[in-house]
Image (cartoon, rainbow over all chains, first blue to last red):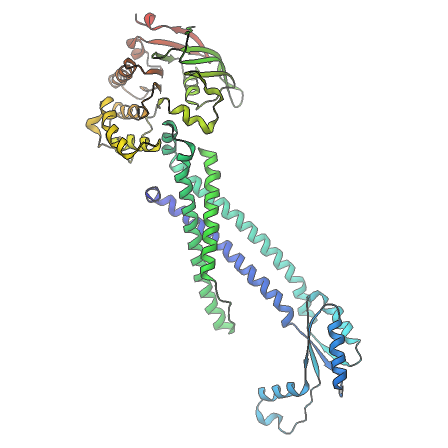
Length: 273
Length: 233
């Protein structure tokens, strides 16, 4: 602690470097995780509407459901009865508008695919079913997402990897600077015959502490920025952003920071002592 | 060349080559007896500092061996060099004092670094400071001391392990003649108490006045070795 206080500026530099690096890295990982989750749930949201012909009987609907579920690539096929759909529509509209109207809707199925890339094949097969009248989906959007998702994953991976490496280099440099600023003490200890462990131990503790402090700070920064983004997103789109796991983030980033600080101190010490 | 029957330090055909094929030492063979006081003299780059740094394991030989008190220290790995250094006191040319610590703290810091207890530190620090005549400046910071006083603190620090050997690299290099003589007097006193002293220096005035063994080096070789009795001219 005394050494940390004495080398105040170096400690500050190392802790803030670790904090900024891990904040960027943690933020990227957090975005990537949520991006992945969002991408996984997208196929559920981009469903295919299968409209059945007028006058299909209940056994035919059951048969169609079986056919749909047997198509390769279909994840779910949910029956949407025309009466229920009409009821829902009437509730959404003003009461007078649907007064006296006969239900114009058809029985339908809401189909989701496991993989967006299989949409075209699935649609073609659905269209070949005799009871099917029309298939509605968004081919352009699906095709765009199909191409965008791997690119986004790739960019995320490269960005995350680069930040991880940069964070390591920054922490290593910060610890090396701390060691350089105390090279006289190291030399004296070495001259009087202090063992390598005795010389290294305070630096290892220092690196560990700086890493933990930086990681914790990064976790808190991430929490704060998530709060700001959450509020903005909710105000703008009325979307609920997933709850931020503050305790987990602080614990994980603190541990990563500590281990990184320790590792970088060990490498820096190997080069100096 | 002076050879001793049972040398305390023995350099045997030691060669040192620095990176880029720069020659540090060329097959040096030399013995030092226990309790001797030896000066290594020569121009800058002659190899005198390289030779004494072989004993402190700050420099590694390319070939040959260095024996200290019967132990072949040339085989000691870097990670274990501390065990060799505990057997000696090293006085560097630049004093290497901690500027933010007082005189007594500089000694105490070194003692704590080698594992002495606080109690031992409290007991021995005043004795060490008295031994090098700097007890009256115990509470001063290094920048408040003269060069000679700073060097005395550095010698005091070298005594923390009660070493049988003191190695000093240009201990008077930064001092005026009066302070240089004071430092040499302290080293002579230690030598009279049985400590072997090796000094690399080019302060010819002081060296000749001391009347101790003089090993002259040139281009990494020992070119002359004058015994103590012959040095007293």
